[in-house]
Image: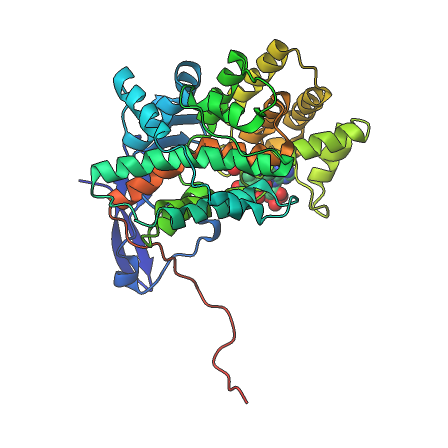
Length: 422
Ligand code: CMC
């Protein structure tokens, strides 16, 4: 007999099925709760609520497991490239060499961004944060591609995927070029996706530009590690916005905004700013640990803690190793890396952090690599967005294909009861 859960309210018992996932995770299926009992559940921050079933990413926070479509993150980071992982996430299977080549070529067909987008970019002040520009520009893509995707048409969906992968990368780099006062750059269809990212960012018309394989490999790995993370804040946002049948660009734009916050993707910028501040103030890590523990002080140790990982973040382990390797290969000596190591070691020995299961997360070491590659701090969250893009697309596509209902949580009203307006 399949397992059920019994809920007793005012002496009356209600039975709910227990849903089991392919990795034996269990959930009480409360789809009929309100119909049967008249009650809803209350769960701010969705700490106990599954919003959907998904075949894309498996995550076990206790064991520190992260898998995309069944493949371990360690395996993918070591053996795959970013476009291969993007295809895997979006379409469910690892692409053959021919399929991957076709995918890359099809993305190339969509890398030209409408020139009129440049006048929108012109309207932003130079001081604008790149994430704000990226969200607005992604949304603006809707106006240049007004026909919404027919999700039931495989060819149409495939084309929308390639278009999003192509154009998003270009506009992401334009946010930086705008800030630098550089002329906008175009994708070079003879080069790879990740190599193009560096060119699009840094190549200027007056000099030849060459990207080293070390840099391409490091970025490939970072993008893979960020590519999906099941129902996090930005991904849930993308699914939620898409559930109203808003288009893919509009949904991704909302995801960019959600990612921007310092508790989510914005943490990578905040980590580096924090490490720089500690360095500039003499490197006293103990002082900052004390601040993080002080409940009167709003300061948090950025890059530490995670809603789901309670033992370690497997992405952080890979990134820490990669940071050491990249800095060594590029011959970069960064005192910030030493501060990060010192801070991590002290926090891992500290009772406050130990008792709350606070460990370094994906953002703790990623900024050190970005910095070594010459990427400015305010572009760090844009880097996260480029990496997360295939995950957002995959989750949006799955949500539409599963014909999920519009997302519309309930609430419990706690405001004034009826009063007269005189
Ligand atoms: N520094 C100091 N204390 C912390 C921290 C931190 N970084 N993170 C959590 N705590 C404390 C928090 O004050 C609370 O203490 P108490 O039980 O005494 O009230 C306890 O740990 C539990 O924290 P929470 O805020 O209830 O946990 P959460 O699951 O809601 O938040 C988090 C998770 C990631 C938002 C949080 O750990 C945090 O703010 N970390 C810093 C920001 C950060 O690095 N974010 C990147 C997350 S990973 C990348 C991504 O997915 O976007």
